[in-house]
Amino acid sequence: MKKIIIGICISILLSCLCWAGELTGRDIMLKVDAVDTSKDYRMTAVMVINRRGQKLIRRMEMWNKRYGPDERRLIKFIEPPDVRGIMFLIWSYEDINRDDDMWIYLPTESLVRRISGGGKKGAFMRSDFANEDIEKREVDDDQHRLLRSEIFYGVDCYVVESIPKKKKDTNYSKRVVWVRKDIWLSIKIEYYNKRDDTIIAQ
Image (cartoon, rainbow, N blue to C red; front, side):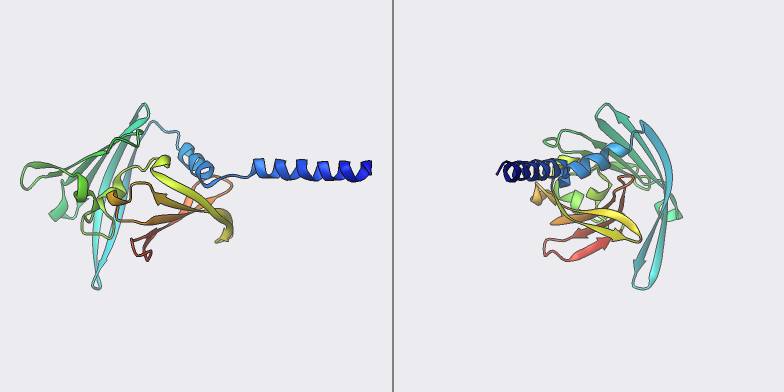
């Protein structure tokens, strides 16, 4: 009888330990957020836009700097000539109750415009991305749920579903993110519209 009771206790203890060790979707996204420990960076990027069989190529430079928990980002387009000098400035705040600030500078008009509200849902430089996509999303902007583990291109990943808490402020109903278990970097993101159709995969 004692052996049976001890066996049951060990089984319960092991199951509790296993349960305590499981990561939640939020735990995983916190680890993803913590991977980048840089204070600032500069990068050059190329955006290729397919439009009715034609390719629009945009080359840009980006600067990012952290100020405590908040971040500021400048994006400047350098090619082709028709978009050269257009700049976006984004101030991202860790406080999820405070909206990020965003401005666009149009050199041909010598004009700075603030982008807010519905303007953040507008297309980013005629691409399939929206202006909101160049903002930094804080982990707690979304509700996160671990869907499964999956091997993706030979790499063991967590698959996490992220649903915005403020649905009226975004074009998307959810994002599904593939996160590498070894280095905590996302290697694939699917964006879903309000009809739950996949509209962007990157």
